[in-house]
Length: 229
Image (cartoon, rainbow, N blue to C red; front, side, top):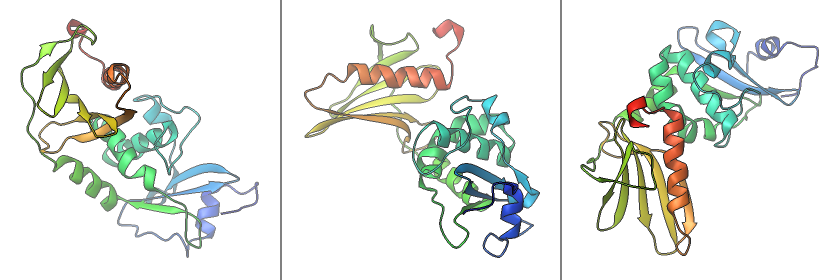
């Protein structure tokens, strides 16, 4: 959506109300580009969504929000949306990577107003989908000299699972016909692990460095207790 650079982004949305209408009884967010700058508004409150509060929780993109792919800007937006909607830091921190991967990465500006919409119902449906997945948990395991002390390794016939001891994070190493698929996932009471990040590598490549990267990413997302470091 093109606007005059002197217009405030909020005014630009309100002027185009026929294209970006919302029910005042329901939470709705809208995203657009104003002079090529990503802008996200909470229409029900007539406010611009700021990254400031989410930056106190996770610091992926101090420069601001983005959407339409998996990256630092979309991660910051995912965290900000969950934090604003649920007003719960633990919920935002636990689910923002999944929310980025499955929702924010799919947002596209379109329609007459050249914007995207996301309702509270959309957000709750996505979180409900994350929480409804269940799968058996690998138990036991032995320490690995190549990983931090809060991780152990469990060998299976068809895969190797690296299991974090202090929270429900796992790195699953699967041997495909042409490539390694290495997935960092969070499980909890979900029957199918919710993916947080992944790597794919040719089968002739040593997967150990990629496993170590995902283990470090997990420890960066949620820092281990001091006695586990």
